[in-house]
Length: 431
Image (cartoon, rainbow, N blue to C red; front, side, top):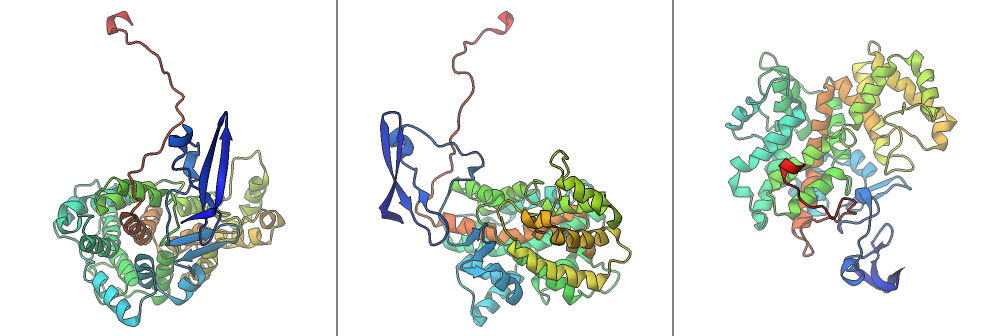
């Protein structure tokens, strides 16, 4: 709500425009520029929307300077340590932590929707075997609207709820099937007696020829990866979901749009880029060479997985992820894996180096998640699909919030036009 005591005055040329200001519960005040064009005849220019609030929200808050990430007011460190992914899903979707009865009901509803329509298996088989799993997920999730007509009416609150549960429940199954298809193995059906993370790991790594038991340490690490990636405020993919939603598109199309945006290496591919860097370094004895290159402003090499665009201090998710990384590596061992040996040594050196400490280049969540997923046996092509599984609940929560917002308008960014304005058409024979 606008603070009646606060306004901003913008003067340009012979015009002066009074703009109301809004005070959030946390974070900086914002200037409301919605009437700037009608009253002043000008637009603002903000490439990347890095200084523009596109919406108001009650879901997630980030303070990059403090290294703080809150979901509905709860610090991510507490949620990752004391909670689990489906409980965090409930919190993001409904605004409060569930009672024991509410959590049991929510987990039951999700579990009952983990299978996908049997006909969709034919859709998978239409892709080439070497198709990237993200390409498969974009197509399959978008196609869900062709199979689940009873949950595409965004004006119906019940259909929105059903679509939300379906997407959260089926996304691990779709991601696991995309992986199985890429490696030429049979699809594995979900098991309703397993928890969310264990079920996903089983669908990825089990085969019909033998029994498969999920290690609880790996399951807990997977659950933490999901939890720590569940939502991250108005990032690129979330903004994409909101923009698609503003046109009235069905929920499956909106989430498919989010997956497509997440596919970009600057967004969801950060942990993959980190692992590629570790493999480029190769062995621990080459780390000093690359540390020196990272400090050289004239060298294009950059340490991936260190620092963060949003967090100007430590990444609060990284502390929890480091604990999981240590547990997984202790379980699986790194003696015969030079990439993991390099990661551990690089982490140690960087944390002790004054250059990185002064610049606050601490290992971030992508550094540790890439190490964990690699140690578990996931190929790099699956890193971003796993991110998509985790982020689905954040996208859906933001989508539901936007649909219920009385201020909802179709997104229509403006532009600073720099092209020609006066050209006459010439017939082709005279050109």
